[in-house]
Amino acid sequence: MYSKLNIKNVILGHKSSLADGKTNSNYKIEFIFLPIVAAIALIFIKVPDNDVKNIFGICFSILIGLYLNILVLLISSISSENLKITHKQKKIRLELLKETLYNVSFSVYISVKALIVLFLSTILVLTNETLNDFFCVLTNNDFNYFIQFILGLFLYKYTIDIFLILFIILKRINILYTKEIDIENLKLNELIRNEDDDDDNN
Image (cartoon, rainbow, N blue to C red):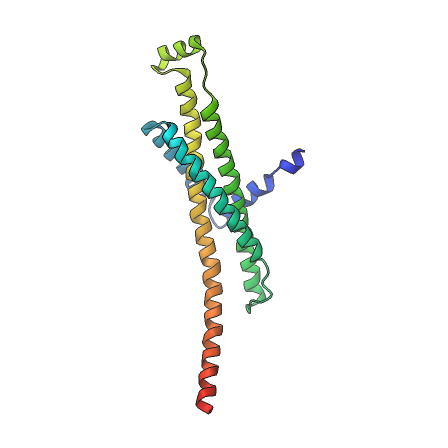
């Protein structure tokens, strides 16, 4: 059962694709510290209420569908038999596809985690008056507010992670398909020149 649910390779592959070519400190600043600091700032500005949670739920549902469509697109693009590029270029293209595949898969994983946090923040409402009174004395807020604060922190953190990875995916897909478009343009230009030469000869 555990082996079927284990996505350790996805997590390691995603981390490797981000850290590749970067120092370890840069990786930590961009993808660990930045989301945490931003999430802390956001949670002190506003603890998610029902309206904000509804927006998050809609966004996560749309993003999961988007990521699954991107996965299908990437899988259908693996074959490079019809591409007139060198073997070295094909190898680089496959490596880029592999890294993007890890990024998209990890984004789906984070989106599902965010939905779980969203679900927990909706159903976890404690009615223990003693515990609530204790927390009211300490923090001027009840224990439910404390729960929403912690879960809201994770919700913001996961959301920032998702959008950071989305920008990475967009960049890699843009690089990948821009090169393929350039190759197609070169082939079309060659065909146009041949047609013009044939017209001149006739």
